[in-house]
Amino acid sequence: MVELKGKKALVVGLGRTGVPAALRLMRLGAAVTVTDRNPAEKLKDDLAKLPVVVSREIGSHERVINEEFDLVVTSPGVPWESPLLAAMRASGAEVISEIELAFRLAKRDWVAITGTNGKSTTTALVGAMMNESKLESVVCGNIGNAVIGEDAVFERDVRVVAEISSFQLEGVTEFKPRVSAILNITQDHLDRHGTMEEYIRLKCRVFDLQRGNDVCVLNLDDEEAAKLVERAPCRVFPFSAQRVLKEGVFANNGRIVIVHNSESWSVGDAKDLKIVGRANLENALAACAIAFSAGADVAAITRALFRFEALPHRLELVAETAGVKYVNDSKGTNVGSTLKALDGMDGHVVVILGGLDKGSDYAPLADLVKRKKASVILIGEAADKIGAALAGYADVVRAASMEESVRIAAARACRGDTVLLSPACASFDMFRDYLDRGDKFRQAVKNLSANGGANAQKA
Image (cartoon, rainbow, N blue to C red; front, side, top):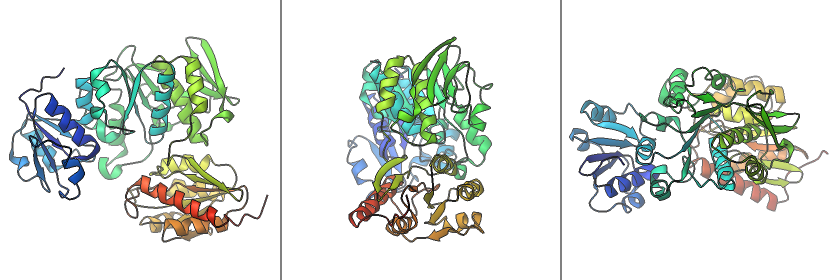
């Protein structure tokens, strides 16, 4: 256990990681201060969870930036190069992320899953496989509760199955999972990290300290992830949906197969998965590779895999109305995610794109839209930028709201078509978050169904 009694600790940023981090530090005897630049009114629910012994500066950092602390724990939403964190490092304080703190306090067998897309689905699926195999695991991180807030992680010898972001990996120094995974790497968060090189460097921190029999799971179908095979300092157990592997997990003639040390297991038919699209096939293969590497039994992996259903807002089939499928992929907040979602849909697709731009290049998306002859509905602040990428493509319209988007989509869709919400953008221009955006899509589809559904005309 890390010695924290009597140490001065600062927690930067409240919310889902900051509050449990402050409470954990306090329980271990640290003198805790919290700070957040948001106004107190916005943070009232979080502040109510903190005991009075926790010092606080809310609305600014003016006071704490001049104080000295032994340890600073930062929330993922706080940029690593922010003036406050820079000042803390200059003063000699150790600055770490909540994930690093949790790892130091509970050096269990960690399974750490990162990548640009598919993290939540894969993490949830790995947790289901582990628990089905009677390997007690706690699923947490960016999915569910923050790791630091999960008491079981610190009180019992459980396995930690954690979804990890590049923001959290900025602040790790000792983090060393037993099994790591990089599912894919496509352009994202460049508004924070600046360059793809820096983004990739941060993703690699998930395996940088792994050694020997530790395992890193990598996607051989992803250009950037495949390049990391030689860079990983531990054993690599890869997966692929496109090629047969001598070692790893792959799809062959529709069958999911695991091969290790020249022994092979047939897991089942990909067509029987309850999660749809080629992106989810990759997630399924990744989950098999991760769970197998973490010690799960193949029979348990199979049982969990084929009864697993899509998480909300991640290629979630909301309804089929008048022969048209409505798929909610509101979690598709970057171009790479939307590319996989759209490319994985069969038949004609009406896709709803747009939101808050994150500095993305939409040209690859435009190429796929044109190749698939998809109908496009644009919403949000990024509509002009996406529209410019689609210059000359006729089947593009704009909508002012999610309700209007769904009505237009219904009018353009025919029986057998799919209406796909996969925005390729953040949500904060029009919605509270991606959850709110997806809920608005669901409600609009529900309203549509109540009014008789789409104008489906063809078989």
